[in-house]
Image (cartoon, rainbow, N blue to C red; front, side, top):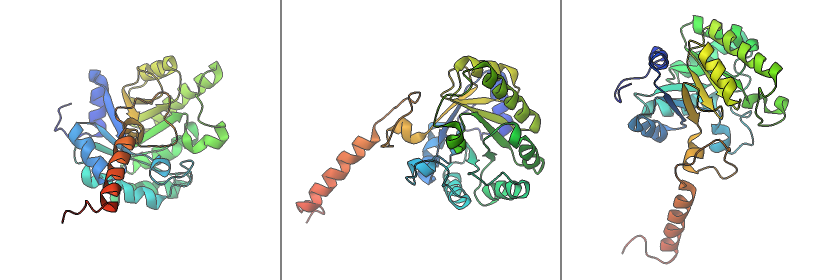
Length: 263
């Protein structure tokens, strides 16, 4: 895809058919949206991970619709080329009518071009209903952070045959429901390869090996801006925490010593 082409759901399908990898990073405000656009990244995912890396919660479960609408709108004001995809937060899509209204808010108020839901067969009917009102939907299976307590922590999924088959089945169910892409999180690379080959829609991996149609990482992990942990699968391209801390200390020292502002 050319750098100035606006990225759409059909465009991602074409990228899969061409064998062109899809790049995705999370974004939480105007600046990240602008930077993702300028870098040529294909998709700006407004993840509910903002609950942890921006708002300081222990998990994503405390994120609200108001949080997601506000942050999605900020990202959409910055990202004009990249496709803006917004996570639907915990308990925002488990009831049919609520799901459609909340997805609509992320599009109308937030400016998202698609929404993302976690889960497999249990959300397939809801995915279909959202798609039927004209909103593109991404699925998300494997390690689903909103189910962290049920899964017993952030652990790789699909390592045994039964769970691998379940995840394969969920991927097909989401595709049949009308999903236009699926995030595969923390599953074995071979399983991700098999799912990717079996689907007509793109797969986006996070901790799922190199065989997916695209990759997504949390921007704060890429930039070294999260102070609690970095997933083993993430690649850190910069350490902005230390760079920023050094700058803040220098500013503090200048103020304390009267070197700023210059007289």
